Image (cartoon, rainbow, N blue to C red; front, side, top):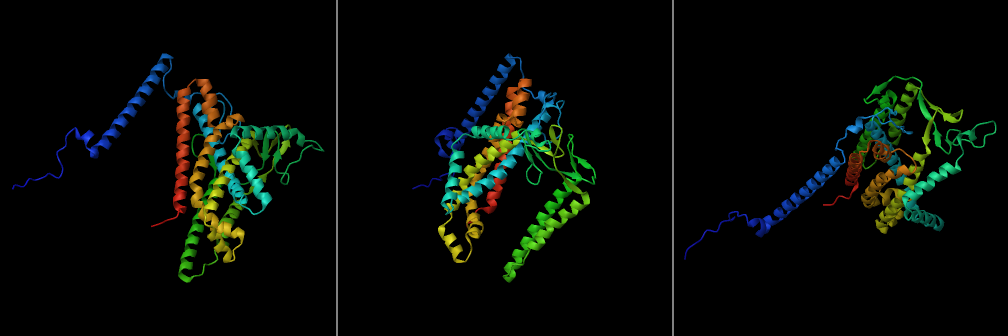
Length: 418
């Protein structure tokens, strides 16, 4: 009888890439990757060849040429002599503005409607049901057009506010004027200006704004440190110290000091000639788009909130009632914090949908990214492929940023299990 030494690993042979299951998976992945790259190479090459036949090339030099068109609502300095690149940035900022405002308002509307739909009051619950079903089952574009038509047809013209006996009156202590073209709102003015900081590209930020941002960030950090100290004290002694007066002072006192230092005053809009001046005139295109996006997305968020609340065990509420908590405090302290773990993942999708749906702004004439880079710039330069590639890239980056931020928040509030 003789012994044969069996090698632990047989020598590698090329046929093992197909016959051996240890290597077969890698072989398939490499082949699929090569096929996808080859298809992409063929598609890009074919596109460039077709463009050259049309006398076009693929470059982005058009971004530095003169735009030659006006944008009514801008957040940074812009004129018709600015470049297409600056017009695209102005459009991107307008998109971010309506997306941020829409996400905040839609969340407030959705949480309120979702909670009220679970109310024991029959009328309130049915009204919320009608709201949700009405907005969920009608396309967003129709809602945008309806809201914009209501603004332009039902509101008075600016001249209706003139005269000894005006046909229209300002609201909220004569500070806001609703017209069929824009909404005139108050603005802030510095009595003691200390100059501005130029951050480049013609954009300046006054020192008062910077000071308020710094003070607000420091107040938030101090408030969080105070909360950590209170929790440590509670764990040590069993009694949580009262911290809300200190927290209120951290936020209020520095802001009041800055208010007195810079001498900030509220400037109300006043009618001068045929238009309001002194405040900020927000175009109805932005207001209508913002309102329609908020109401439409709020209906979906309401259903997400309702599902999240129903996912919390009923015993949690009953235990809270047994401890003497009211329905309102039970909802805010017991149910909603637990439902948040169920609500946040689908809520991320709604924020992404709202951001992408803001591209329907062209229906109201609001100059967002689609209307500037993908509209006027595209038509003037004829660079449709480059414009579309840029827009797709920008919307992709925006969506990834929103998704990453919300996933970080979701990781902080999710239930940690062993």
